[in-house]
Every structure is written in C-alpha cells, then in structure tokens.
Length: 418
Picture: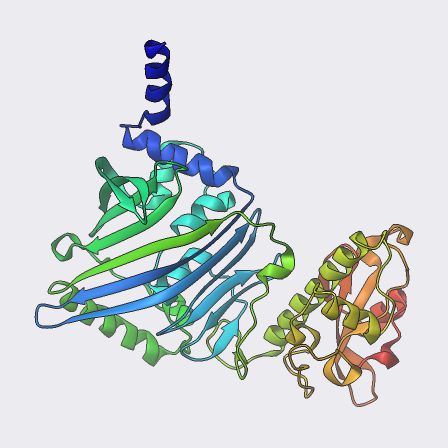
C-alpha cells in the first residue's frame, strides 16, 4: 500500500529537468489552445551610470486562432495592434494615429510597447512553422539555455529558465502546473551588444513604424540617432520585465477583437503621412468586411436569415452586439460623425448601403458575387460614381475597378450611395 502511494506521489510531483523539454511543452501548450487572454504589465528600467529611470505600462492581450489578436497597452506611449480577421491595424497613441500598414505584430509590439511578442508568436503558430524545440528557442529568442532554479510567481510554482540572446540575457518563469509563461525578463548586456549598420530600406521601415515621414533628411537623422544610441548603450543597462496575470481561455468571437480607436485619431497610410485614397478605401474595405462578417454571424443565430435591408438591419447588428463600434459604420473621409456609444445607427451616422439581394445565405448561388453592402466614395462631374467599395457574401471586399460597369453587373442601386 505504501509503495503504491509512493508511486502516485512521485508521479504527481515529478518535475522536468531538461530545459529544452520544458520549452517544447511550452510550445505544445500554446499550440493546443484555441483562445488566450491575459492582463499584465511591462516594466522598463534604465541605468545610464548617472541616473535611473523606470516606466510601467499595463498590457492587455486577447488571441484566437488562426489570426485574431488584440494587444493594447496604456500609460506612456499607449498603443494597440489588432486583427479582427478582416484587417490588421496599429494605433500609435503618442501621435493619436492609426493605420493598416503591413508590418508584423512582433515588430509593432517591440517598437511601440517596449515588450516582446513571445506569447503571440508561440500561440499564432503561422508565425512559426517548425515544430522542433529549437524553433521554440528561436521564437523565444534564446540560446545556451539552462534551468536556473524554481520560484513562485503569485503563488504559482515556476521553472526559471535562462539563456542568451545577442546583447541580452533572457529569463522565463514557466508555470509547472500548465507550462504557460507567467513572467519574462530581458537584461541588456552593453559589452555584448553589436548593432549592425542599417540600410536606407531599414531606415525607411523604422520611420514608418514610428509614424514619421520618409524623407532624405529623416533617413540621415535616423542614422545619426543610431550612432548616438550605440554610444549611449555602451554606458547603460536596461531591464525589461513582462508579467501576466488573469490568464484565461474564454469563448472569444470576432467582435471581441475590434479596438475602439480614441476620438480624434487620424487614419494615415503606413503612418508616414496624410490619408490617401488608398488608405481611405482600405479603411472602408475593412469596415465592409466587418459588416459582412457580422451579418453572417447574425444569420447563424437566426436560422440563416440575414438582417432586414436598410440601415435598420445595420442597427440590429449594433444593438445585438454583433458590431457595436459606431465607427465601423462611417467611412474615414465622411463628413458624417459616428453615433455616440449606445446610440442607434441611422442614415445620419452611417455611410454604407446595406441591401443584399437575398434573404438567406443559402439563397445565394455565388457568394463571391453577391453584394451585401457598399459605399460610393466619389462621383465625377456628371454624377457618375468613380470610386465604389463593396463587401460580398463570401466575406471579401474590394474596390470596383470599373465602378459604373461593375455596379450595373452587380445590380447595385448606386443612387442609394452617397
């Protein structure tokens, strides 16, 4: 009897001793999860030899496979990166601007929050195709790993695994109970840090990612700043600590990944200038994809029936919680103002014409050519639309190449457009 109890106890409290095996279980854990949410903080501490400073930022994270995410942070240099399945966006709080430029989630998190994208990269596995434990190490950015000790994080027993990255020491606190990362720390090592020369293309990417205009003067200025940064980094140490709490796997839907852009935020193309026609139509295409996606979500809950035509149907999406953000019903270039929170959507607060030719999804013979909603951006001197964006029942949205001809082919009542 005692022997049996001893075997049970040993099985219950057996611990891993191989850091590589632990990290493999970490990767497997995140790959097995369908959703993930957590609240936490990022603390950045800097010591330049003469003074010390510290900044703390709260961070919130929601993830859902295969490609949905919303990561936001507050305090100094607030911001957010998000993808609702229709379009990916980034918001820069310091300049109160946002864009849909194609820069990676990891890049934005590192530049804007000062944190890393370790958890999103492990969770959203399309960012890391290799299943090997060495791939896990590359995602987590470390080599020469070792199991340093065991510690508690908020009462949870953790493996403490350390290693090196170029110019940094990395440490992870990993729960022994569920193999989730509860804490991560990076300490910069000035003498080991080697910053490579950057090209003009690197400078341009850096300027865009920080919301600056790409000019010859700004490129040269960035080069000088990099030189100054090299000299400064030789003298200072910097420690960044991320900690996550309230970790859950909730039942998230697409509408949970809509970030409410702060009032007055400006839409920019690639965060490097004023909104252009492309940026404006990109924004509208994103809105139309959201509308179509939420129309289909509504239909799933109503026996395949779409909301009734007209702005009344869009109001049913808002009031039903399918698409609650008032800004999603207004084009970025519109003179109309979005409805206030909890205020009904009307023609005065909506740019999009919602008029699907079918009442049920199953009635469509060709969803990719079945228009659900559209927006007439502009008309020529004769009043003929010269820019129209349309959302289709298959979930796609696009700008019509030949607006007048395609609108007729699709059966759009362009007189209903603005």
